Amino acid sequence: MPELSNPKRTTRTRRQFIQTATAAAAILSSTACRTVSSTRANSRINLGVIGIGPRCRTVLDGMLPWDDVRCVAIADVQASRRSQGKQKVDDFYGNTDCVLYHDFRDLLAREDIDAVLIATGDRWHSSASILAAEAGKDVYSEKPCGITIDACQKLETAILKQGRVFQAGTQRRSILNFQKAIEIARSGKLGKIHTMHASIYEPVLQNTWLPAEPQPEPEVCDWNMWLGPAAWRPFNQQYVNGRWRREWDFDSGGALLDWGAHTLDLCQAANNADDTMPVEYEPHDDKIICRYANGVKLVLDFLKTPFGDRSPHYITRLGTCPVRFVGDEGWVETGDSGEIVVNPSSRYQELVGNLERVNGLGVSSHARDFFDAIRSRGTTRANATVMRRSHIACHAAAISWILGRTLRIDPNTDTFINDSDANGLRSRPDRDWMI
Image (cartoon, rainbow, N blue to C red; front, side, top):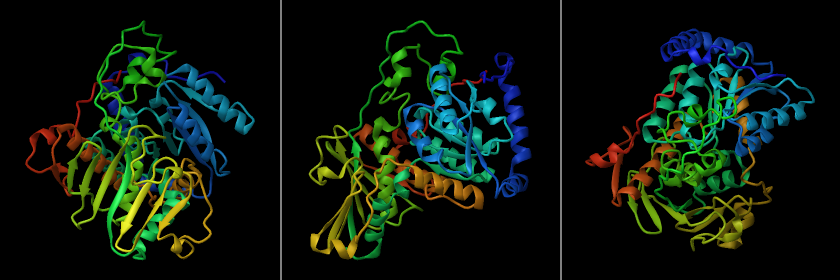
């Protein structure tokens, strides 16, 4: 099937698009939107994909097998990725039905699409999610869901205003070993939890302009759409191939959120803190110490590489994204290997039992939680408010590290107390990318 795109896209003005999107949002919002969702409660969920790189293809492995879900369309700014995505989806279903778009706005205009998986680069997550919500779609967004504090706030506001189901791609919330470790921490069986450890990449500050290269035709790689709301810079193929990671204009918090969006989020759950966040952030050479209003200390431990140079707080065999919850009477630790370690070890059977080990990278359970919420019009484990709290805590930690000083934040307003420099880093100017 040929790719579909709007032949008038190049002459469509920003004003026209905003007018169209606003009208569509008005029609689909509130009661009307909920009515559409309820009438589809027993029918198939039609899924669209926005951005289909390597991570997206992994996420689709956890979504495609569900019988009540059908991926019907893919949008990506790169022709090669569009074709790879179509082949993956069509091969799975044994047909050629998946429709391709190079501009995701055309995908959002389809009334038959109920939900979208957004797996672009970080720079696009919040903007694409907001446009999807305004178009009446439920949203599963890969993390980090917002590249700044302001973006996370705006995303939560849009999801709640439009009455959409939202799932952040922090899939460890739905994985058995992490859920069990959180349950143990909350149960009081370790005594009062006083310290939590979350592993993160060592942050970086990098903004390197690679040499300008000839810009490809938009149908091959739409550079304007690839950049999206990020600051303009000349095209270089290395960015498109993945070199955008850890670049300040394209990444989140000096890469702190790459793991922090997962590991700090798990600590939020263990501390029963999904309605708040740490109020103080103190940077050090090898860690950032965060403190909650209830006195619990959260240590963000820097790991120089994903698989080496472990902090001494962690047992290396537990895999990526390890966390540890420490109480007066012992501790529990787990990671992506699926294994759980407790101290004292004599309490393992009592605390853990015969738990099945599941790799922390799988998304099947998390995807099912999203699809079930679409049907029930309920909430997800990693809903927009949960996302906002944990993501903003990560951003606050990153800003304390950037400025090299202790910061305090008001968790009700997400603003820093008596620090104009820090508050100046809560947002970034968005480039006007619409054509």
